[in-house]
Image 1: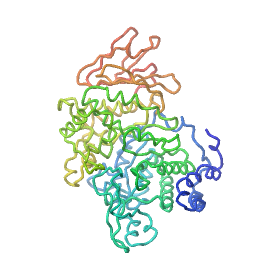
Image 2: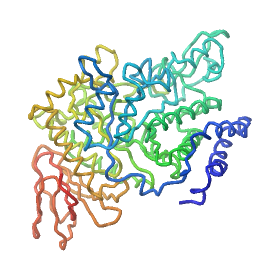
Image 3: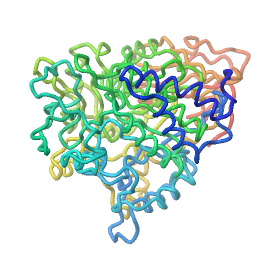
Image 4: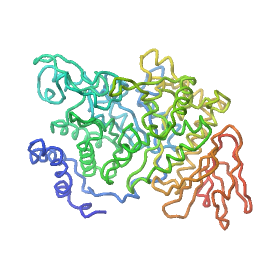
Length: 592
């Protein structure tokens, strides 16, 4: 703990927050003292007397497991209760003893992008429920809330004020000459960067990184920062434990630069972290930056930016390993991954509301495998979304597919191993260093929703299915349904995982060098009293693990937690059926 960890909040503000404000706004000639006074006025009613840094080891444990879901992923046909109340019912009945946290995707009034074009940050979408419904979930689970800072809906009050030339919104956006060369700006979409809009001053062209209904905000104006500090305080006071900074890498714009990962963006993340620590010290920042791995890792900063970063390379590499039936690229990537700094962790996932990002595979997959990957995803019912390149060409940005259907087969085509292959992918994810997060449609083995794509005209809708609650319950009560099999098996594995100290998010991880058909790594608890060898068969054929390859210590009894079997002394080979995983440990904490 550093020398300013336990000082009074006002002193900490001067030591930590003010220099960050100076770094961003001082070079712009803005009155830094005035900005700091306004921030302190906002913070004053919310300051925590415990505004100190947590011991990094105490921020989380192996017990932390999250769900990712929309507020209306499950709906009742009779509509007698709000979708958020229905979600709470499902969580309470099926996942209360399985998961510890819930990321409810944007639950605010919105105009497009299924919530990420926010109209009003301080209201709950009445079609979903109200703040009481959100609070009810937050009472039982650690709540992750989206802070969509980069852009706002074109229907928001701020943008309407811009179009009318009225304050404060008239100064909240970025308008530039349409002849400006913006070809070097990194784009996640293939729409035009500049959106023409009529104002009292004539046609202005505003910056819109993600599309013309999502207008970028101008953080060079400190008033915008002040607005979002107020929003952050509201979220923390209504139960938020994890704050997800959506698309944060694009936050600051400087003409002549790529307008991604700029230093001002990193400084503002540090500023947000300090403000959160002053109000709710045990809350964590999560950065969402769907970019190549090296760029993504920069958001840990020097242990002073994100507490958690999305592990974006993981989904395509896990899927590719199971398509190709070999571990080489997954293993190479894993060996290149540094341990997360103490007090930071990877946010591991294999599926989410977005597609499977392809930019994180850059430099990791060979060209032929990359094309095979795309071909298989299309064959399994997926779609490909494109992004614009600087030269005007397009390249794949993400694959839109349900992860369950991405596991229909291998590079050889579809087969009968979909469920075991899918379970293997999830077991790999939950075994890795970091905190695991399961998309609701992974827990529920949801298939591609092609009707939703046709209805909305958006490819991402393929993996944003809305379950009818009664139909879902019927499936879960049918023992041999995919939904019942997957939720039952994953629930057992998650509960088992939560009891193992070797799966602490910061526990040691070491890549094992096994035959290509196997993927394996060693985890060791922080107290060094438990080891787990996490071994995964990536093929539809039985594989034999030579136990001497993982250097089992002969003086210890060993046990596979997943199959509930003892490995007797003198045994040298361990057989794994198709797509079977093993957690071979020297210390059995408990059985699920």
